[in-house]
Length: 146
Length: 174
Image (cartoon, rainbow over all chains, first blue to last red; front, side, top):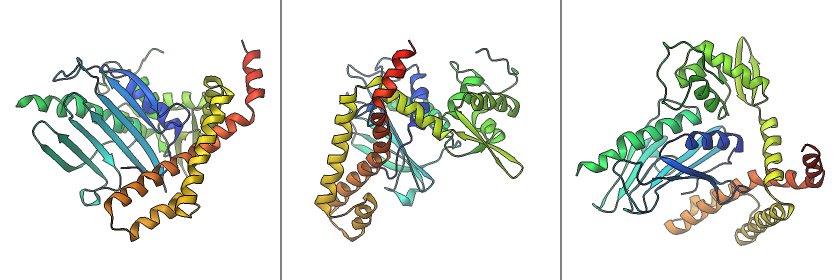
C-alpha cells in the first residue's frame, strides 16, 4: 500500500547509514534507482539470520515519507525462500490499531495477523534501529520454535 | 574519530560508538529537537549529545534554531539539498538525469489525463467515493507515487539546470 507524502533524501541518507551498519546486511540500494529514490532496499545474508534460511537472500525495505508534518513509514522484511514477510507500518491502512502496526504473513503455516505496535523512539534512525533489533533478535528467532 | 565520552553511559550496539549513534540519529533529525531530547533518544549524556550536535552544525549537516530559551537542532535542509544535487551531478550523466526527468514528467501527465485532475491530493480525495477495493488500492498507489515524484522533480531539475557548469567545477577540483 502506498504511503502518503514526499520522501526526504537527507533522512534517507541517514537511514541507509543505519542499514549499512548491520552485520546481517550485505548491500543497501535505493529503489527503483538512485535518481528516483523511492525507498531503500537492504539485502540480507541468509546465513546470518536466525533461523538461517536460503539460498535466496531476504530483503528489508525501508520507505519513509512526510505529509503535513507527520511521518509515515514502512519497514518490511521478506524471505523469498519461505514466503515469510513481516514489518512495521505507519500508514493509513489500519487506523483501528493506532498509528503504527506490525503485520506478518507465514505461508508455511497459513498464519497472518496485524497487531498494534509502538516504538519508544521517534527520531527515524532510532526507530529503525529499534525495528531491526526486534526483527533479528525476536521476530525471526521466534519462527524457530515449531 | 575516537569516542572519549564517559564509560558510565548506556551500552550501545557493539559496532557503534556513542558519537556514531548521535551522528547517525542527527542525520535523520527532520523535526527540530533539543540536545536533551537527542540524548534521551540515543541513550547518551546530554553533554555527549551536545558535543556531537555542535560538530554537525559546524559541518553544515545540522542547523541550530533558537526558539525562546530553547536551542533546537535539525537537518540543514538547504545544505542537504545542495549535497543531493551535487551527488546526482557526480553520479549520473546528463543523459541519465534527462531520461529520468522526462519519464517522471510523462507519468504525471498520463495520470493527469487519465483522471482529469491536476494534483495527487485530488486523486486521494476521489477515493472516498469509491467502493471497488482494487480501484481504491490502485488510486492510492498512484497518488503515493505521484506525491513522491513531485518531491523528486525539483531536485533532478536543479541538478540538470547547472549540469555543465557543475561538471566543469568538478574537473577543476581534481
